[in-house]
Structures are given as C-alpha cells and as structure tokens.
Length: 198
Image 1: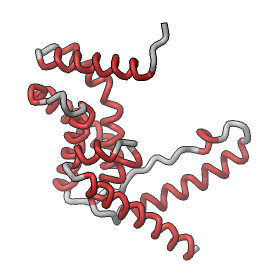
Image 2 (image 1 turned 120 degrees about the vertical axis):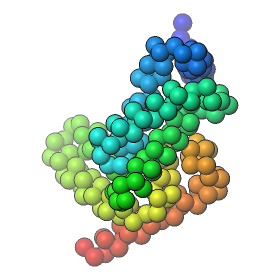
Image 3 (image 1 turned 90 degrees about the vertical axis):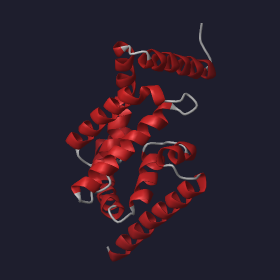
Image 4 (image 1 turned 30 degrees about the vertical axis):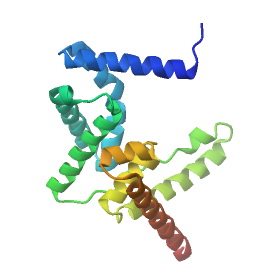
C-alpha cells in the first residue's frame, strides 16, 4: 500500500521522535542513527562556513558530542535539525573567531553535467561559466558581514525556511529577510560591477 507524502512525513517525524526519546534514555544505537541521518547536512553547513573539510569534520564531531551531552535539554517543540544547525553555526563561528581569520564563503555551483547530459561540448562551456561565476561569488561573499553571510548560506545554500534560519541564528523573521536582502543585493551589485569592468 502506498502512503501519501503527508503520511510519509508524519511517519518520519514519528520515527525521529522515537530515536530522540531512546537517545535521551542513553541508547547509543539510537544516537548513532541520529548521527547517521544528520551528519551529511551538518558537514555541508560547516564546510560552507569554514571552507575546510578537516575543520568541518571537527565541528560536526564536536556538535554531535554536544548533542549527546545535552540531548536531555532538547525540546520537541523545536525541529531537531534547527537545534543541530544552531550548534554547528555557533561552533563554526567560534572557530572563525578563535582563529582570528576571515574565510571565504564556499558556494557549490551546480556543474553543467547536472543540467546537460546530452551534449558534451555544451557541458564543458557551461561548466567553465559556472566555475567562473562561483569564483566571482566566492570573492564577493568574502566582503559580507558574518550575519548576512550566515543568513545567505542557511537560506539560499542549505534551503532552510526563513523561520528555521531565524531559530538557528536567534533573529527575528524580519531581521533574517533584511540580512538576506542586503546579502543578495550586495552580491548582485558586485557581479554587475565585475561584468562592467570586463
């Protein structure tokens, strides 16, 4: 019997709630399931902030250690991913502050192969254009203030909702929208300036 998408979502939420409850009871196997289900998203977020795979792995490991230590304080009223992302963002920010250096924003641009499977010549040209655009955006994003960069990464690159971003960054919805608007406007403006300069 096929299930509706809503029923599937409800089933997944129910399974997640059960895994979290078992983790709260000290079930290491359940906690391992939590880690396996969420570590790729956590790594992706940390990597986009830090631009270093080793640092991102360290942050994810530390984030899950904190989740394990503080799982009792997790409240099911909030989404688990929002709680986890908040931990990853805070640890990443602390790492950047502690190192005393600014990092570039990592942006994964879709490769031409993801769009074009039929013409290799077109794919090569499109891939070169994508790489050039990604390089420009990386350079531009370096100039964004940290909050704008974080809102941009979470909303546009991680595809989180405004509400989720607000929860992670402890900002109002309006503040998220404002920071996102400024970040996008700054990137667009700088891209246009680069285009004019040739």
